[in-house]
Image 1 (cartoon, rainbow, N blue to C red):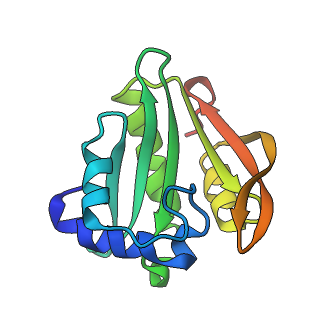
Image 2 (cartoon, rainbow, N blue to C red):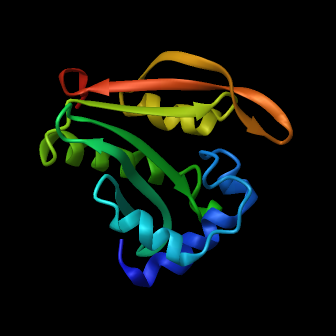
Length: 160
């Protein structure tokens, strides 16, 4: 991700329909492009701009990268909803999974979703992630409490 994309990414992250499904540091806030820049510069993160038909439409990222234990969290969002339903996010996650396992030598990736986020569940399951548990009532959304559903994928379980 380059500085030229920080404004668009900040605008996407500021939208309730996008950030309602993310961690509380992004949820329900107006995000300044400088915050995106800080996230990109953090060596424990890797953020990538997703494009469809040459047009920026979302982000895939690794966070909490631990190169000693070889584990990282994967997260993603589609900023341009017109690109939804075409497999763009699933393809971007697939590419990021390959990068994590092959270039960064990560052994285990994990992700979590807020219970009820079925499109995100499908992205993870299409890419071989398995549900491994849940943390009950661990996220707030629309004034309610919801479970965080956790998924993982190990290098040994990577599907073609």
